[in-house]
Image 1 (cartoon, rainbow, N blue to C red):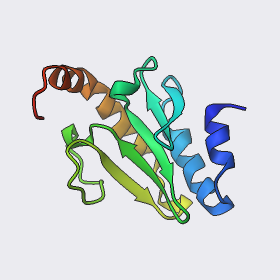
Image 2: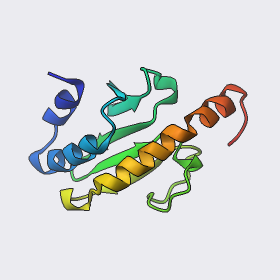
Image 3: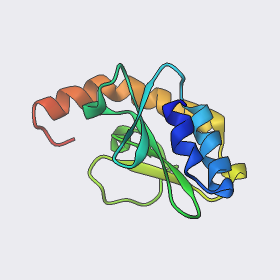
Image 4: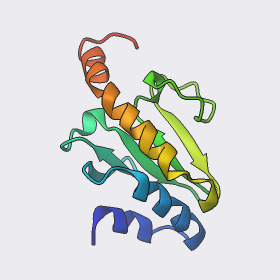
Length: 124
């Protein structure tokens, strides 16, 4: 069983349908692992600088961007977190694969800056 399949198998059918659509929109070339109770995606297994994750609750699934604060998007839920940003989905119909693909591509492009800034201990 793949890591993604393992994560999805533990969800209710309603939430699984949402999470499956989110997972399907994440680029397949990212590595996946269960980290911090979420399905976490990284470049070449660099989970210190993970790109995004899919989390689930009893009634929703969410796409979390590790350094979403660097992205010029207004799609995120309100947040006071320093770096992470999330988009919560309460139905499979809310999931827009092209939007997820675009925001993940933007996060991948911002990865070198995030690595540099966090290495130097700077505030973003």
